[in-house]
Amino acid sequence: MSQNYGTITYRVYENEVNLLGVAEVQLPDFESPTLPVSGAGLPGETEIPVMGQMKTLIATFKFQHVNESAARLSTQQVHNVSLWIADEYLDHEAGQLEVGARKINMSIIPKKRSNGVLKNASPQDVSGEYIVYKYSEIIDGKEMTKFDFYNNEYTDHSGINRTEKINKALGIS
Image (cartoon, rainbow, N blue to C red):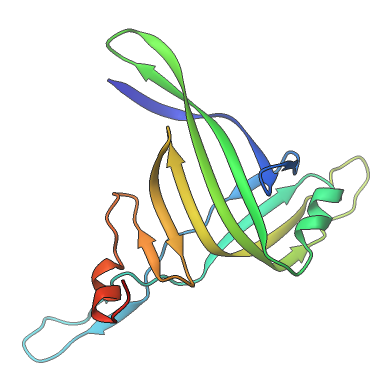
């Protein structure tokens, strides 16, 4: 049995071809909007997540300095970005280290660009925040997560399609 222990390294591409260079990437949080729950006979208030719905997904890309990649990603258009990731696994039974492939695809549009801080002998730390409209994560060739805002698709990290019943109720097949 192999256990994933972390990322060895990764690369960032736009449109599967253009290497964007070294960036630190903060992946989006998957957070559901909630409905308040309270009333007679309940011991207070709580919330329940709205099935298949997501708040805005935001990804952040950080670059050490101003470069062509940071400038290109800040143009007001949809960018198709892929992160190709090499993860390290340990096969406990065989006692061997292994490499697993993971890929994250995102369709993003810029929301905010921070030009960082200028000081002597230091990187500028340019960054950008991007709204994520499509997201998929593929681990060793198997799609594990899929989110497509405009097509009302959300398959969560467990592989369950959380919008299938909603779409059926809406007459969408």
